[in-house]
Length: 61
Ligand SMILES: [Zn+2]
Image (cartoon, rainbow, N blue to C red; front, side, top):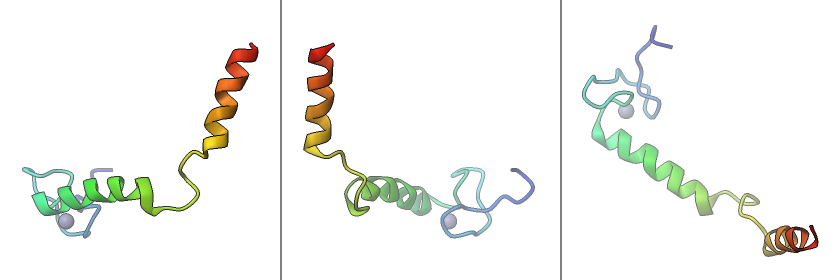
């Protein structure tokens, strides 16, 4: 894992200060990528029926 110290965002040499990224900018981009996944990737949010089903199942038990 430590043989090549590259920023996972832009693949440049990472810096000690912003490890594992090369800069604060890439750190922010990584965060934004995770936040973006919350609503940008289709088919990953829980369907209302799914949530309702969980509640019903709990009540039956
Ligand atoms: Zn970078």
